[in-house]
Image (cartoon, rainbow, N blue to C red; front, top):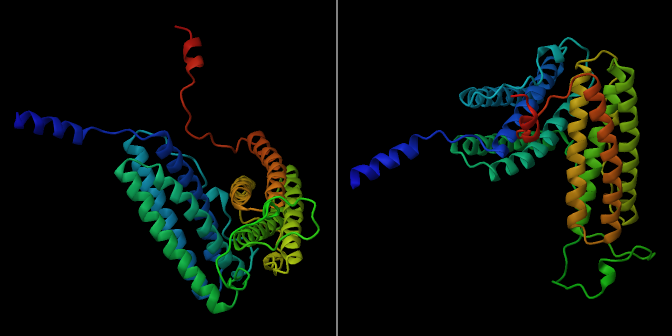
Length: 347
């Protein structure tokens, strides 16, 4: 009886558990993001002059390249095709400086924040130990890199702190529905700390997006791509003004924008394909941020604003996807079997 139990356990241990759709999807997405990041950091490494920032860029590039190797190993073992992603053809390391060193540092820190959020979700839906361990280790490495970037930003005086508010005197409870519903009232209640946080985050994310699209519009080759970036710059600027006005009307300072960190080069360091993909990725982050903000803000006028602005950028994202499809740049993610197509196949 014991021998058969051992044999059964042995079979179960050696059984090759296939990747779930979630594991496959997050590994595929991570591969594309790391191949893009490798191109960006190769360019940053070539043009960065500040030694402290350069060290962080090298660490980030090494991490991205390590991730690509690990995912390639997992996919090869599963006989899963390796994504095309982005290669040396998508970066021109000899292009002049398009961004200041400070921009590169702030970019690195903001991309770390975005990456940590996505990796956390990936860990939560990863059942296989090798995939779970990969994302767990990646979260640790990314958080360490983010912390280094934060410390360098603080030491250089460029870290943009969220606003301060007074510490409450005591615990209190909501007594009026106007805490939630006050669309028309002239004397809206003060912003809560949670609402301030999301407004701050969304000003910062839009400021990064605006600066990137302003830079990309200067250097891209395709006219449709240029028009897309210019439209995106306008949308980001409008959203920055909206969120900033809510903060300032609540007597809370709004964070600075990043326009001054884009230089006047017109030589493209990246392919149009890479810049379009990067932009649509940032749009997806923005939609996610707006959804989180709408779900956690207690003032319904703010939730309504986030919902309305989400719809605007969703339409803009669709335009971007159409441009990617038009030029053959949109790589298909892994998909479920098309059962109807299989049924219709000639036998």
